[in-house]
Image (cartoon, rainbow, N blue to C red):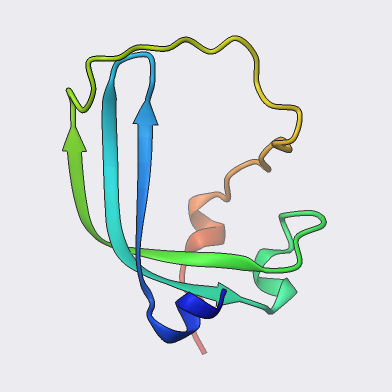
Length: 92
């Protein structure tokens, strides 16, 4: 997490292996240490907040194709996404 503390510039790449597409996100990231901010993630000791500044969609990023055989047992199930009311900004 030291790199994010010095330089918040970050990028994420999501590859659709079955279709050969990719989604590239650029922006800024920071490490969140207050457990109240990510209490919905059981067992997490920290989280990374990513703020999107740019999006590039690449429908034909690669001619290669793969298929999902099984999901990794090391990826825990995700919690239900928050509702719109839960995401609304809090007013002082």
